[in-house]
Image 1 (cartoon, one colour):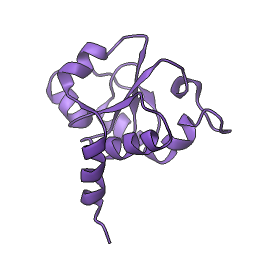
Image 2 (tube, helix red, strand yellow):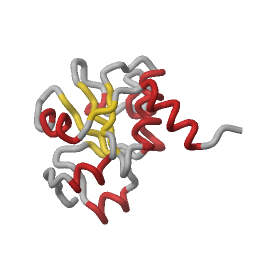
Image 3 (tube, rainbow, N blue to C red):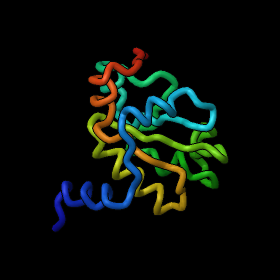
Amino acid sequence: MRSAQALVDGALAVVTTIGVDEARSLHGRVDVQFVDLREGAELRERGTIPGAFHAPRGLVEFWFDAGGPWAKPALTRPGVRYVLFCAIGWRSALAARSLQEMGIDHVCHLGGGYEAWHEAGAPTERR
């Protein structure tokens, strides 16, 4: 049996990880969509990155599937780069890998997740 940490390490080896500085430079661009993978309670408790689309980790593959019945327009726009994030970067690494396996190559994840963003003093909002 492989551990969860082994799965995360494998994902980190093949996905693009960006840091807070690069993420801040991308934030607010029309061709970039931040995607918050955390559970609703996490968003309510800690806040989120302004403009981020909330796609709980358990639904992200279904919502990104442009040909599927649960596709979300915000997650299937051509020419958009998707920046995934979770609390510390583990769920987002796994999701980025999964999306790459689906053929979505314009996806990356925020290393350190929302906690790194928040600790850096980057903008946040409550929902």
